[in-house]
Amino acid sequence: MSGRSRLYARLPLLEPDQWWLEQAAAAPNDRILELGSGTGRLTRAFVDLGCDVTAVERDTDMLDSLREHLGDEVKVVAADVTDLPDEVGTGYGLVALPSSLLNEVGDAEARRRLLRNAAARCHPQGRIAMQLLGPWWLVGLPGRSTGRLHPADGSAAIDVTIETVGFDAWASRRQARLTYRFADGTILHDDLEASAVTPAELTLLFEDAELELLGKWGAIPPESPQTHDPVWHLAARPAEAA
Image (cartoon, rainbow, N blue to C red):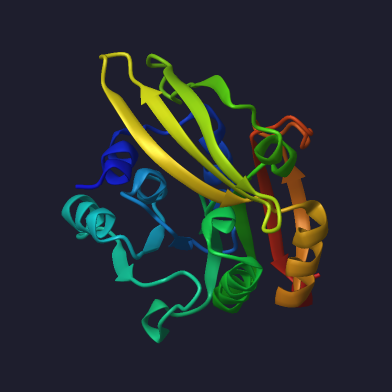
């Protein structure tokens, strides 16, 4: 199992993740399409909520974990999120793009394809929810910084150290190594390569995919996005539903 897969399998639901369950509860039906499901951290929460989930992932190790732990409860599809196969279907009340998925796809064209795919699979009255890295936070990362993640169940916090590796100014793409330290002493690493997606680009992406912005929140909803926020949350819907 890869380092990222081991990390994703270990990470619990976090305090801000309640937002995802609120998005699911506000959807017009209980069908959820989760793009970039990883090892199923959010997937399990959606299932426990009683939703009918289709989980899309392309990483082999993460697919193995999904199938092992959730294969009897969700539909697992091996695919690239920018090129979804017909078997995924349409009419989902919620299309979820978690864990900085929009930042990590390769370039602006890939982001356009991703949102077009999400919009095409969404119910006309449904919503598309996404979590992305705060663009100004990502651009301004210092050489070394620290933070802390708080599990939703109140268990011990997880310490995170971020060490920047490089920054491609032309593509606004950051490379960094993240080190996670768990309360039991376990240390796991993750290599991040992510583009800063600005509000100006998001506006163009939404127009291209014919989406209308429903709301925007900062790192901990319902707070509004701030310049220093490491994470933003957005919700949109098909424009014809306006």
